[in-house]
Image 1 (cartoon, rainbow, N blue to C red):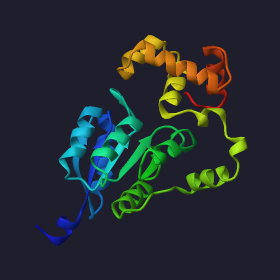
Image 2 (image 1 turned 180 degrees about the vertical axis):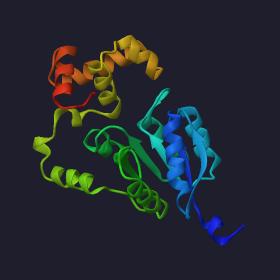
Image 3 (image 1 turned 90 degrees about the vertical axis):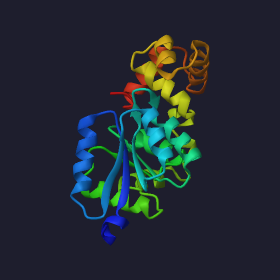
Length: 217
């Protein structure tokens, strides 16, 4: 085996869309220093893939069918603290990026970024550095010293925020409980906390707020 092959950055990809996984594989295949070492299509596979320990960087979709990406990220960071995880999303950075970074992500990438930016982020994460895009850097800078202007939804915990978004998407408490594998009582508790923190009375107000702030599609 050549020295270059030995030194290649081994990337693990966790995304439930086969076309996305193939696209990322092709992007990496066009380089000499990055190779795809494994793929996962859901949360269970992603966690197992991380446990194997043969990757240098993981690309993790923030929304997988069987579990929320932030929760997966936290578990992977707990079990494999030396594995950098770059979070991928179709959503704008201001919706999930800061939450992902706080949860231990090595960086956050919108799926619409140019391949060159994706590769730069992989190389930076493999080198042990955080990847912060110019737009996210500006967002972080804007938040410094302006706590009194913090949007209400940014005061929510990750699970509370997830519950709010799902309610705003039209899902019932029972739907959310089934999808997150939690009890209806637990989701009802999160809903109550969200309403209290957001100073709102019912789901319609939450939905209006989420739509107004582009928190749901």
